[in-house]
Length: 112
Length: 115
Image (cartoon, rainbow over all chains, first blue to last red; front, side, top):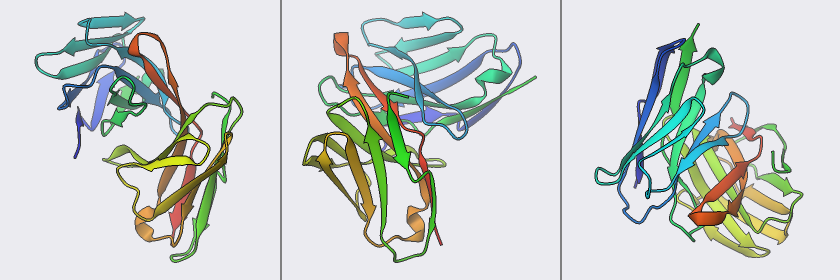
């Protein structure tokens, strides 16, 4: 059972544009939502995370938007750069469970 | 990289042979995980460990076993490798932070090909 659904599977954006990746979850017990970034040949690395008590979190060009009633959250990359080209995973966890459930991943390509 | 190493980094093996992948960490973290990554499926949890000799199954555990005899080492074994187990395998350690945060740090991965 896929508890976190991520879309799109792949995304191509022009340099300077906005990249948007969406995730939806089913389990209302989830209370922590991280995003991971993975470059080719490397393991995923934590990028940014949000808790459901806020609707938005921004770190530099990266922003998470969270909609608790819709059970959706999204990653926005402003002024996208070729160096942002990577695979992005959303994830969700329940406090104390010590496990993450990952989305299927989005391969992002930023064209120069 | 949170002091996580995986060995081997690449392996090609034949169907039916046993294979063991090793994950080693240097910081005495309690929680360790094995994932497999396949296109269209993201990262799927195989097994995890919450201490020495304490392990549990993940969502795709069939055909895999694990062992953790020391805090720093977590071994993943394919008892009889099949072509469906061709994948990239990642080890991770888990850290609970403040305000309900929970983070995992991943190793560099092992690319396994079963022919």
